[in-house]
Amino acid sequence: MVLNPWLLLGPLGMMVVGILAVVLWKSRYKISLKFFIFGGVLWVAAIIPKIIMDGTVTPPFYLWCVSRFGVFWGVVLLGAYVGLRTGFFECGSAYLGFAWLLRRRVPQSGGTVVSRSVSYMEAVAIGVGFGAFEAILLALPSLAQMAYIFLDPSLLSLLPPDQALLLEEQLGQPTWVALAAVWERVFAILAHIFATVLVYLAVAHRRPILLGGAAAYKSLLDAPIPIFQTMLASSPYYIVITEAFVGIMGLIGLLGMLNMGKITSKGGNVIRNKQ
Image 1 (spheres, helix red, strand yellow):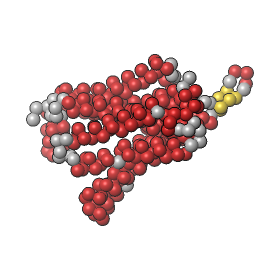
Image 2: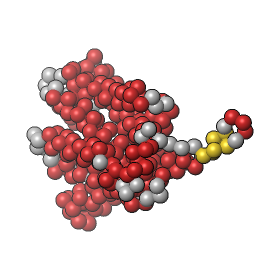
Image 3: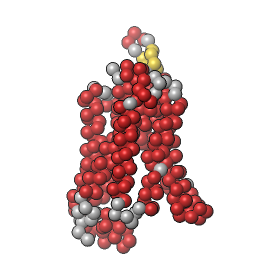
Image 4: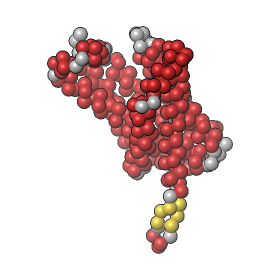
């Protein structure tokens, strides 16, 4: 199979999307870079326990589900587990982050101390940073691996035959697959922004229902992934269906941002905080 170096556009495009999201929001609303970095820290805080779980409890849990309920329902339960885990850790890290920011005391000139406030636009910037860091840090290892192999395809011969064949198939896919990865990151960032802002409003207005809504939205975003991977892995429409789903969830997030005043009963405060 002939390797397709144009696939490098995938991870490169993911990184560009993440960087552009930060640059555009920062320049448009003059937001300090520290808010974007803080969003990235929240993503790291959420992903670490997920990685630990994937190396410990997730494999035996999946095997137990399959042995107990069969492949189909085992995968469905795994999807529920993955979704709930994402909702809990990602929204949980955002909740703790905003709770800390909004309660933190900041010294002022003259010796006075005031509570730190976070504006609506700064909260959006934290959501942008959350999604942008994910896009960049997910793309970097993929970009490095692909670049090494494209520069020296003989490296494939050093891998076990099954792994080499799988990697060769992946690196021989058509170029549109790379563009699909970029598409996914655009809508994933929109989803992260929406959920992060919901968590911000939950903390700022003491509305736990908004935190629950954010967690449910994030759970629904990730829950179908194991199902798609298992049930559609051999289908030529796997990538199309998966990316279409992410696109739909991203559009829901965008519509949610455009109608945030209707989602929360304190919509007037949301509008004023934008200033």
